[in-house]
Image (cartoon, rainbow, N blue to C red; front, top):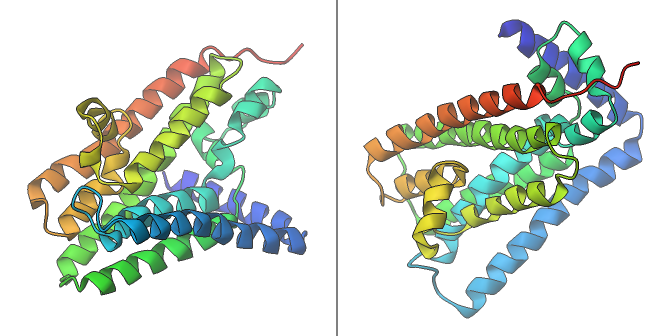
Length: 262
């Protein structure tokens, strides 16, 4: 485990050096992350300009949901975006190099690329959550703040594993873009209260694609709408389950890989 972490940080250090060689591109991509997220926030504020609540949630409460989703997205983009181009490496035969190295495959995949656009996304997410908490005048004690911070990290874990699951499909299918786009778009459901969706969608969002564990469940706990025990049973267990499911799918899918060698 420690060896994999050290290797990941070495991969990331090399990626940073490479990005800094093109400073203008580095600056533009970093700013672009903030602009992209600003577009979503404009829609949010425009929505609540015409209505007062969504399923009993006001703008600041929904902003907390937005912030949690944006945090996981920003962390993934900044630190683990190597899995995004994974399908192209499989189709081009570049995955051979991964398999020949005496390094954990997941470490190589996640450490293959970082994107500083995620840094602006993280800053925007934290700013939005702080703003929403202040406007709601929530009385948050240290223990609750600690649990919420832990959930943000578990949300990143859930997000990364779901992204890897989607990319693993490339081992078995030639054209996976449409399916991956669907999996990516599902995350937008987590930006709004779970109660507005049909029961079937809610089941999916708390089980197979547990985006609700990234935003809805922890925010409900923060707002006092959920008891502590459903959170403890839900979010950590979802992180463990999705990690296990990702490993299962990845290990099964990798057996379908055909080398591009002679």
